[in-house]
Image (tube, rainbow, N blue to C red; front, side, top):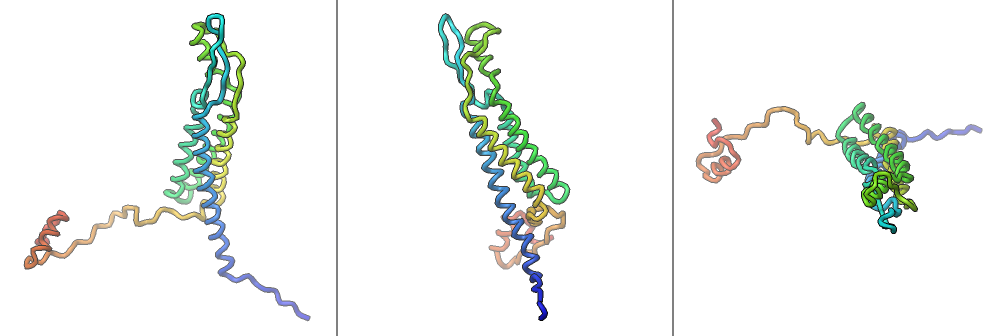
Amino acid sequence: MEYVTALPHPRTEAARPARAGRRSLALALLCGALGAAVALLATRQQWAEGTAPVAGGTIPLTAKGSDVTGVPAALAIVGLAALVAVFAVRRAGRTAVAGLLALCGAGTVAAALAGASDGSALDEQAARAAGDTSATVAALTHTAWPYVAAAGGVLILLAGVLALRYGRLWPSMSGRYERSGAPRPRRAAADPDRPEELWKALDRGEDPTGA
C-alpha cells in the first residue's frame, strides 16, 4: 500500500509570514502604547512617604515618582516615539529603532526598580522642612507604584523585542507620502472663452494663459 504525503499549499505557506507579521504588529502596538501610558501614569503617583521632625513634632512628607526620578517618564516618551518611528524607516534603520525601543523598555524597568527604595527625594524635603541639611526622613515607606512603572517598562521592552524579531514583516509608510522630486505635471492652459476656468486657474496660482 502506498501512502501519499500531502504537500502544503504554496499559498498557505506564503500566508503564514503575513499572519505572523499582522499579529506581532498588533501586539507590539498594544504593548508599546499601553506600556508607555502605564509608565507615565505611575510616575505621577505617590511613590514614597515619611515624616520629618519639626519643632518637637513631625510633619508628613510625600514624593511622587517624578520627584524620585524622571528617567522612567522620559524613556517612556522616547519609547513611544521610537514605536512610531519604526514605520518610517526600513531595513537597518528599522532594526536600530527597534533596538532603541527595547533599550527604552529595559531602562524604564531599571530606573523604576531603583526608585522603589530611593529616599533621597524625601531626605531633601526633610532637610528643607527642618532647616537642617543633615536632617533625613523618618518612617520611610514606599508604595507599589514603582513596580507598576516597571511593568510598563516590561511592556515597552516586549514591543521592542517584537519589533526586532518581526519588524521586517511590518509595512512601511506609503511612498505616496514621500517626496520623489519629480516635476509636477503641467496643467493645460485655461480656455479663454470660459471665464470660470480663468478664475479657477488664478485661484490655484497658475498662469491662465499657460505661458
